[in-house]
Length: 166
Image 1 (cartoon, rainbow, N blue to C red):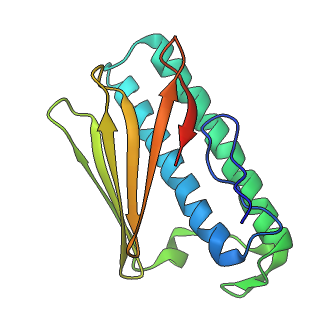
Image 2 (cartoon, rainbow, N blue to C red; image 1 turned 30 degrees about the horizontal axis):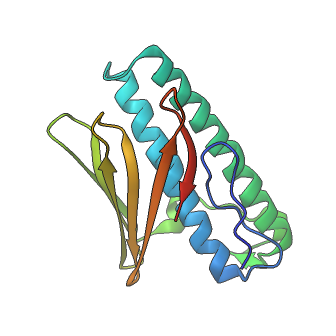
């Protein structure tokens, strides 16, 4: 399996040589990354972070959305035959297509995102965030369908995430 990642948030990208079932899980991880960026943005808006952190969160979210759009476009034009009666590039997913889905989040005592749970078709994905001594997210542990993935983030001298290991 090819393990291409986006440049901004190191989110997983699909690859033409990967199997569809592999890339679906990678896209789920990308959505979790977008969700994490959204959580950081919400905290920034609530006045919990500096203007620099707020600007970085906006840039990360924009990059995540662009990468996700690229991934969805690629899958819909190259890999997906039919979804909900639509074929090829006409495939779009709407909230109604995800029936049986739910999302719940918990926050710690400082109102920071602690866990995110997603339920889709009776399977639960749980993402738990670990923080460093400065309160920044340093790792995310994702558990889904009996499998666990831990992503550990590294930061540059300015405190921005500049790498990830899994």
